[in-house]
Image (cartoon, rainbow, N blue to C red; front, top):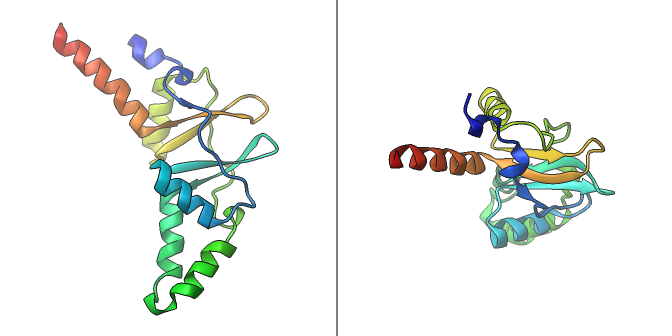
Length: 148
C-alpha cells in the first residue's frame, strides 16, 4: 500500500465548505450553485451536518417545476417557496478526518457518490471530499511516477 492510499482525507478535503440551512430556499441554493460553481452543498443546522443538497437535486426540482415555460412567474414562486429540507438527502455516509484516501475511494466506488462530508465525532462539519479532490491526488501520483 502506498503512502497516498494511507493519507488521511483531512489532507485532501475542502475545509469549511459553503453550506446552507434546512430552512433556506432553493432559490438560495440556485444562487450559491451558480456563483460558486459548487456541485454539493452540505446542509448544517445548529453547527451539525443534517443533510446534503446536490446540483442533481436542484436540476430534478427545476425540471419538474420549469417544465412549462409559459408559467415562469409560478415557477419562480415555487423555487422561492421550496425549502432545502424538502429536497436534501438525509442520513448521509460520512468520513472522519482520519479516514484514509483509500477508504474514501472504496466508498465512492461502491456507492457511486460524488462527495462525502467529513465530520467530527459530534457530527460537526469539518470539510467535504469530492471525486475531484481524489482526481487531484491521483494526478499528483501519476506526475511523480512520470518524473522517475
